Image 1: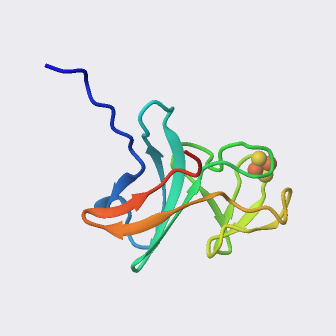
Image 2 (image 1 turned 90 degrees about the horizontal axis):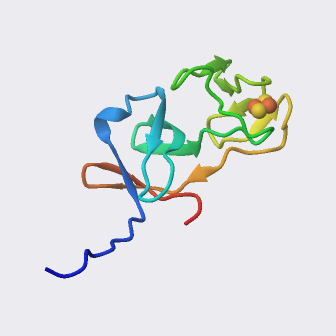
Length: 121
Ligand code: FES
């Protein structure tokens, strides 16, 4: 028996059942050798967007409890200090951090659901 092979994983799978239509969902993505990465995901029809669950204002999580998000007029509201984000593009349009943007992860549709790549390797 030889040495174990090292496999570099470049994508994580989000299965279709994890993303109900139109619901903002908090997930943890698991990359080998790294801490779980909290993200939020939104599916609208065949389009899926995934962002890091990190506010660009002060680096805090956006949810007030794991997977629980505040919304106001179709905007995501950061639970820490109230920054508001458009869900169309992740732009911060009101509150502290205005002009910033959520960090988007690359997503592609594939067998079994959506395949997500990390923001950085
Ligand atoms: S950390 Fe989100 S508004 Fe300050």
